[in-house]
Image 1 (cartoon, helix red, strand yellow):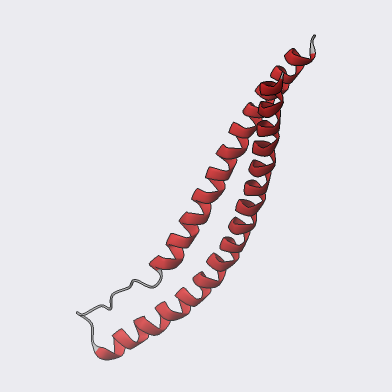
Image 2 (cartoon, one colour; image 1 turned 30 degrees about the vertical axis):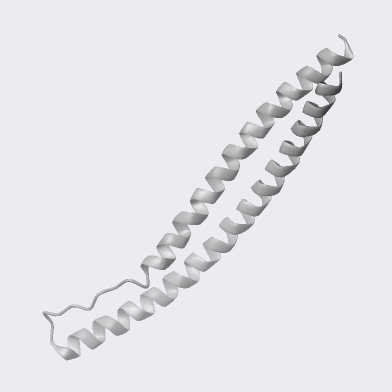
Length: 109
């Protein structure tokens, strides 16, 4: 196998790895966006209007406690999602860089 053929084979492998890592990056970004949307949804609530003031107060208090707990869980999930996204982004950048180097070497040959 000649050097040019080896470089071409390496470039094809690098392209496949780049596609794989870009797909992983997209998946991580989508998961992060879903978690962010769930967090934003906690801020958009409406109060019940057909209940008495005492019942409305209890509902609002209990919902407030639930949203506080849910926000804690979602913020932890968002931290994990952000870390996964950052790792996937770094991996995609490395593989993309390798593919670009191989492409430039192929152009020189």
